[in-house]
Image 1 (cartoon, helix red, strand yellow):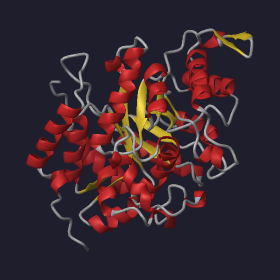
Image 2 (image 1 turned 180 degrees about the vertical axis):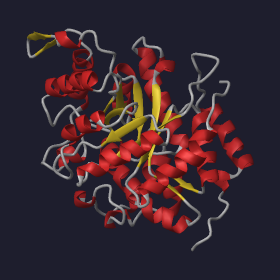
Image 3 (image 1 turned 90 degrees about the horizontal axis):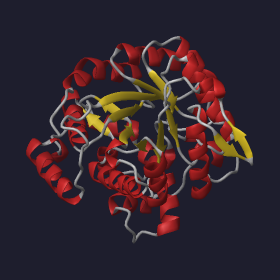
Length: 373
């Protein structure tokens, strides 16, 4: 077993030094004297057997997780829109939703009505995560939804699913039966300035698929600037960070468990480079690593051991994920909490899923409490 080195990113002094630098580069304001506690979610792939997703959601709920998310890619895996109602029926408190769905693979009015229906079925536990569409659309030969249309559809869906009237296709539409239901939050995934602009103007939160503090700060500053320009309160925009986490003292094994993840993120980064190039406002810490990328095979999307992840370095695994012992993972999560992250969502596509949930429930989640802003 390879011993886990005491890496600089877990050193208290160097962590505080890095935080001071981040605060100078990306000052963050908070709307109240006390920040919300860091909450925890888990994303489970809708792989057969479908009962495994439900079982993992139940175990996450027992361990103190607040959110249960799943993917939406109907060719690669089972249809998650059919599975979430089953999960709602067999959990009690877990908030449920997609991380992420998109407004282009289904008619957006259907997606809005489905979420409103599920808000009733789940007794107010739904939350929507939504992006432009990666595997869900590319696998069937479609490109991600264009930004202008993305924003237009999101504005309509947010109102429609929450019982407010909309105009769509020259028709006035309202889900009259949804008027009295609790508000469903909409969190928007993005990396580039234009998608983050949509998140700031329309979303209730930003979904960020990586756990690198510097990149997170830049993403949230970009989205909050857009929120301010829209006349919205930027401090109300939530920050949801999603990444794999593997707890243990074998760092070599942990990195192999998660190497697929930065490779998955690289799909989005390649889109950014195609539009903006390498020399742009987007941090080099997000774009430089993809220069070594050779290919991507969606048949191994989010799979441990995927060949397309071989270009990912150990350093990128450490930056983009939460790895190490429970103590080291807690240290990194405290760093994320200190820069304003509201939720850490574990991508549970690694081996030892039950052990990961147990480690978080017993050793990590109890370590988090309110701190002064």
